[in-house]
Amino acid sequence: MCAGVFYIENGEEYRYYFPNPKAVLPVKLKTGEIQCLPWGRRKEQSGLLPPGGWARLDSIYAGRWDRYFPLPAKIAVSQFMEKDVEGVSHWFDITPGKWIQGLIARNNHEQRIYVVTVEPEAENAIHQRWPRIMTG
Image (cartoon, rainbow, N blue to C red; front, side):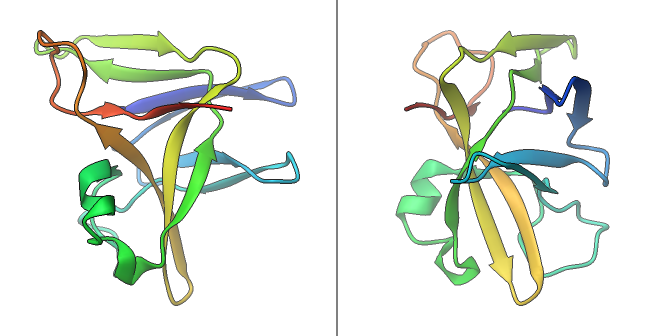
């Protein structure tokens, strides 16, 4: 599902994990600049946007996110982390030129980014959801 991310910006290394309430994700703007947005919302955090850090692609297509004025976003990371069934962390590289698709949700002055997820193509996949990797 993508529980952590790693990226390098201006020579600095960053790692963020969703459970941390201060976790942010780097969004690549059309200008090429990077802007960090809060990664989802934890249940204990205030706000009206959905709890969690992920948005299922099928729920986006079904219109469940429409009330949050969703915007597509490029999450500019070089790796993401996922845990296996035994709780062991595994890091996965993102090929240069590709990115994780994000959804920016908004409600008045609140704005957060969610990782868009899809069902994995592999039949023996450990997880039911996987970050949607995009090209272009």
